[in-house]
Image (cartoon, rainbow, N blue to C red):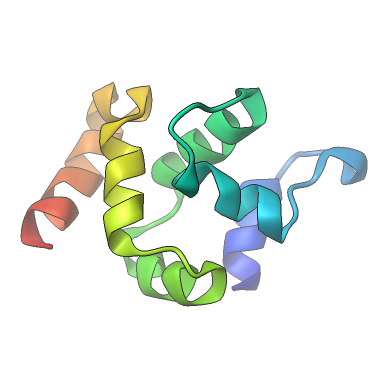
Length: 92
């Protein structure tokens, strides 16, 4: 789990680092502020599909919510992100 915190908080000042609730929150909302959007984009750009199970367990977020967030976000328009995540969600 430290890997997920490390990735999502990389190159962010200590005062601005994301805590548990901030990381979890965007997956339960349909309207996102700039911090939520940053988390979503970094999540899909930098985490691997192999991280999903540990993320779901640690943050109590379902794969269905992750997929819904992905589909509702502009991050899915990025070809590199799409190549990684579309096959994962297609198989789910």
